[in-house]
Length: 228
Image (cartoon, rainbow, N blue to C red; front, top):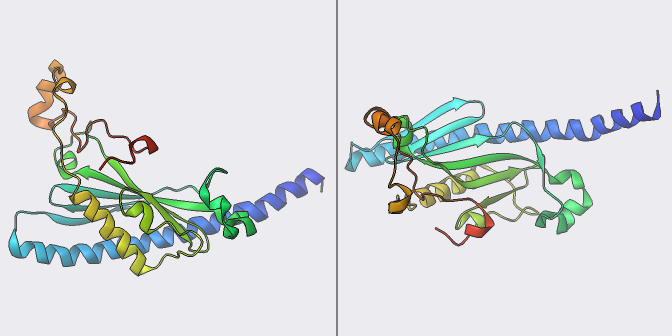
């Protein structure tokens, strides 16, 4: 066997097996999250039904990588990426002894949490905007951190000591819901909607196709970290 062939085998043994471990661990956690959301939704639906039967509270298991939670006017989409990622060298986790001791710990699966208006799906408004409110990173040792808005950005950022379990998933779910329900629909600036097309007007009654979002033009970036 050539030296290159040995190197290839070593890389497969070290990295490919590790990535497979990360993937399988992430999908196991995602399935746990699904069961938590389903149970939470059933209990919440009973409570909401007591004071307003008009409000929809619904859980949908869409695929192996996606589930949805609709509460009244909001839909949260939980989406697991099928690939494994490594934190870039500038990420703060590289400064920890935990990652320095074993760089393989920097490889994580990602579960993204998006917030959409429920009507975007009910009315098939395909131009509507959704917002990334959190993304959960988990490695093969169950260590995790969350990048997100408001409390999610600082409550769950101890990658060295934080490990995922059912109770932690429940806290992440409730934090996501609190942020989404408090994240209101704003009227877009007049100049942004002062013109439209004939096609949009013709489709408006059937598809409500004029673009809508809670924050028109919102971007999930460091430049907007101060925005609510």
